[in-house]
Length: 127
Image 1 (cartoon, rainbow, N blue to C red):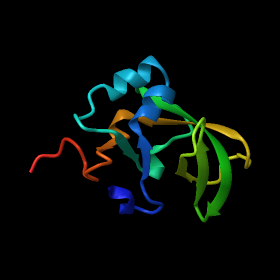
Image 2 (cartoon, rainbow, N blue to C red):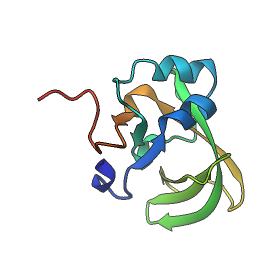
Image 3 (cartoon, rainbow, N blue to C red):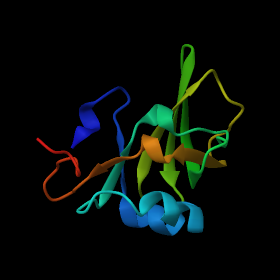
Image 4 (cartoon, rainbow, N blue to C red):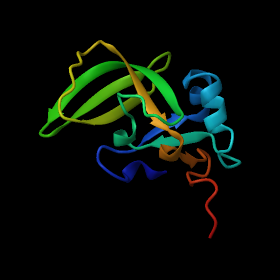
């Protein structure tokens, strides 16, 4: 799968987790049209936002385990709420957050990259 694209690497989150924990009816509406065979979703670290966008979006809660300032940006290493799923978020600047804090992140539908865990391939691609 495409974890090698970008730095930090793409986050791979089970689709079932997003259905259950991504924001109720809004999550279901955003996820219903993913290609057949999708069971894992890739999200680039810079596509997880701390501020809610105006368009429909998923909301994901997490626990901040490590805050790493990296020049003009910061890397937030979190664990998704109710899961052992590690996730990395890249944020511009240095947000006022503290390790151990519960954070909410927002992600829009166009930021979701559908994959199949078994094949390791992106779903819905033709050719």
